[in-house]
Image (tube, rainbow, N blue to C red; front, side, top):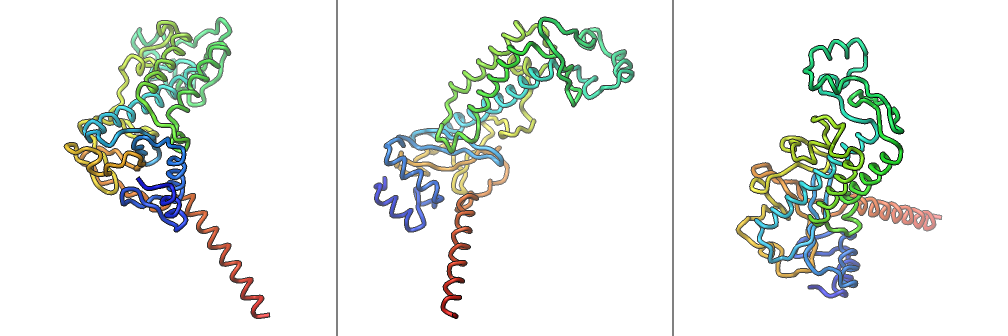
Length: 311
């Protein structure tokens, strides 16, 4: 492990390396602070996707095969939470979902004609709901939902739980150095389940096609869909990449990253057989902006010096 003085010296010289890999100035500064705080007890993996990322803590003695299973579990739990949170938010703000045949329809005559083609099981959910017990209307602009929502106290409770769940899986947790743990994510799912059960005890009043109900009853099809937080993966068909290399399942993490436990690496998960992910840029966008600003400032200073010399 490099000493604090060595890390600071590398940073001041404009470069820093972890296990032979050059890292950004910001990452080097964070590493120096973590050494100072003695908080970096294990390796931290920043798992990145095209638009998302999360932080995970692991020891370097972990087999790659086991690590992939752990990361896939975290990845998939994040996707489940994200989809469930969005579904509950929609349920709280616009009410239950219409049958597939009626979604997007708003003209009464068209709705009436379509209803005549539905089965009796679906027809019972097609009649416009009647408000009761403090319920109110909030029209769904997409016409996918009926727009009848529960009383304000219950809907606020649902939204608060959704906000908490979204914060738990936010990519901003990487900057906050909050690593994800599967048990904590499962707890968020239980809390979301509790919010739905309070609003709709025993799922009473929710049709069989309601996404929140399908997810909570493990009937939602995640495979083959696209999600903002990443791809839903299967451990046996997933590869882990770091520094432009695919990490072999038969190896240990330390076979690639060295024996040093107190390290941070940026890795990527991909579906096995897909092309290698693009390597991380040597500097991030924020650091690049600061560098451009610095060089522009120096350029302006040099121009002023030249003007003084000429005069």
